Image (cartoon, rainbow, N blue to C red; front, side, top):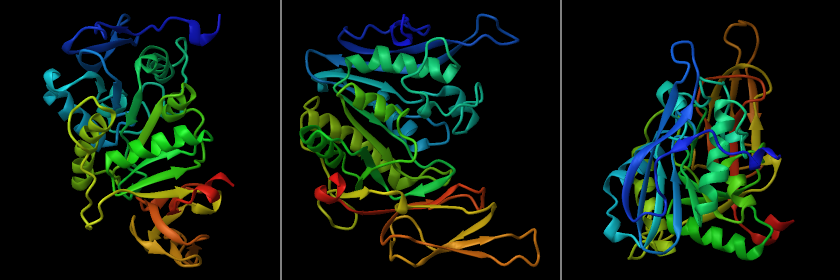
Length: 346
């Protein structure tokens, strides 16, 4: 029997077909020294009224990304079933062990849950949880919004994001949904390691998938929280679960999201060695090819000169390095450019 056909080991008391508001917990088994039959409780809220689309909102897939946890949690507390036509499933703290540990990786199995999809019911904790989302929740869903930030590793220009989809109709629908969310930027990107992410799992099922990057540097971004809260409500309006029109106005006076792309590996800058990275630009700044992105310092080697790291492409900084200390191979900057469909398809 294929792993995807094996029943999930996670228990859930929510009846997803019942109208009204239901709040409870997924109970994921975790046997440990002090509790052989122990579980991890993962909060889940389902709000349903009549028939209509189903929306999945997730936060806390990475434990050190706070804006999604706040935005989804607030909506889960306040969403009135009478204002809904359809169903909204909300998990504000998906990876509870990582959320409580304030880390990207789960302290249970030291895995990045967002590199574990489609998961494995007999695998590690992160794989088991990914399998539940993929096989139990996603078949119910019409659109998924997975709210991320750059955590402790980077700072991101406030944005939604999506993968480039070969199907032009699905690509347009996804770009329209991202534009409705209303972040300053929407980034169509080709990542370094995307095949095992929640976004990829959603896309494999032919479901609309929107991600976000709403801050970073290990803090709560005030504007990121505002954009996140507004964006969730905007998506509900866009897909017809709530009445009203999305508000996509921007702080800089723009009326809508600016579509961008990260097309090639020359958009990514990697540290060539371990050291202390001194960045020269913040996320959202415009830069030119050849500009100095920063200096890599070797402060423990008194006579070793710093190394210049230069941008390989002009554009806008999507991701700027967060921590001072970096290791060889760490990404220290990501550059984005205005989206052009012909170039994206090339």
